[in-house]
Length: 267
Image 1 (tube, helix red, strand yellow):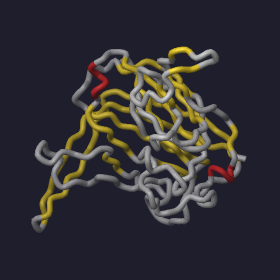
Image 2 (cartoon, rainbow, N blue to C red):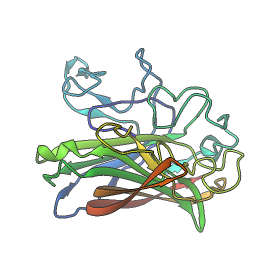
Image 3 (cartoon, rainbow, N blue to C red):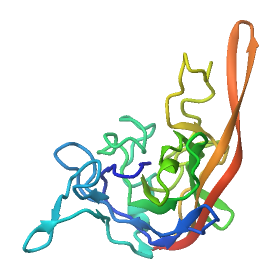
Image 4 (cartoon, rainbow, N blue to C red):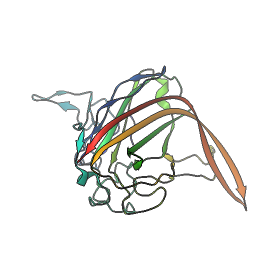
């Protein structure tokens, strides 16, 4: 997962969509796109940000070259290769040997995605104290083939600049990755959670991911539905101590959200 002006690499998937808007957001394109090879800095080529972006991987564009201050993403598509997108059989190693799928330096020969979800929106919340949350769920009928859980990326610093463009992106394949039970494979488990003390003296390490408790199945040929939810929400932490061990859990109260659902087809 990434914020505005950050980039990461992989190999295949993309879809364009629009975020449903609330009073505090503005609708903009989003996509599930194909991914590219890593840059020399080790992160993904797509999305590629111009000279006004954080990675500055494509400050110029065109022939002849001209200054580029936009965002370049992979090609979106409705149809995708089932063989490429089935993480159980496409060469992905489980457990992830080289880190998490949202880590820009972790995507290599260990986790092999078939595509990348990209979401874009503008923030008009004015809210810089509540947290920004991102969740993606991919289903085929009653079967779940990917679930990120609730990814908490910390205080929403973008709320200070009305109209700020925010980009989230993350690489995906689908399926159980050869593992059974809740939070298996592409149904992501807890990460940096629960914690022992979410205090200023022991600050949280983001992302904080709360697992959905879902059980992922392997994908099959046919349509799949992708639902992405982006929220600004107030976290409330509750801590309990038992036998000198403190465990803190969180609940979120939604302040504002954008939701988009769209379809792809695996064949």
